[in-house]
Length: 125
Length: 109
Image 1 (cartoon, helix red, strand yellow):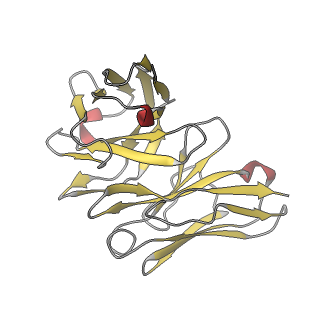
Image 2: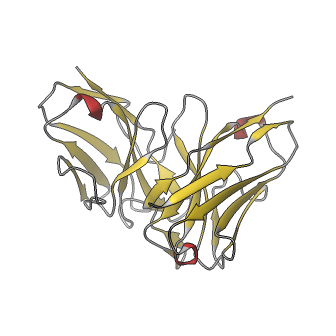
């Protein structure tokens, strides 16, 4: 069974940085695009970022563009989200997810399955 | 306010058929595939329908999806108590990237 194990969340002050990790297993990691999606407390889902299987194409929501950076190490089957200049409104549970479809030609399929267990990020002084 | 518009709530009795709508525009639903997610309380979301009407393995055929123009719908037939959850539609938007609907809370009466 495909597994996505997340780590790296926690409490950080406004303006601080945090790096999330998502370790994948039991599938050919480099063959699949990956995404990060977040959910603020009591709110709905918000897509954050996506990356192609090779890592050559990346995509960001306007709300995080210029502050967050998605990357992957296919040799370690691990996805990352580097979050800088964090704001209180970035407080959320962050999920990584495997994309069953594609990220290419300027779009992604957003066929996300499965999802990681989620990791909470709290931005507060 | 979400780019994809869903009703905030829906309800039905066991055995009933319920539909949840998702309205978008030509830059998202009109030109990209629509996907649906189920989120049970306290758990990570789960892919329910992808590419408008395809079910991943393991998803019961009680769940079905459709798309017409810039709108989509999720239908749940033979409603069961375990279907009580939040449901989200999602699609790619040419300007915004990935977009989700605001979510619909389904209550089984």
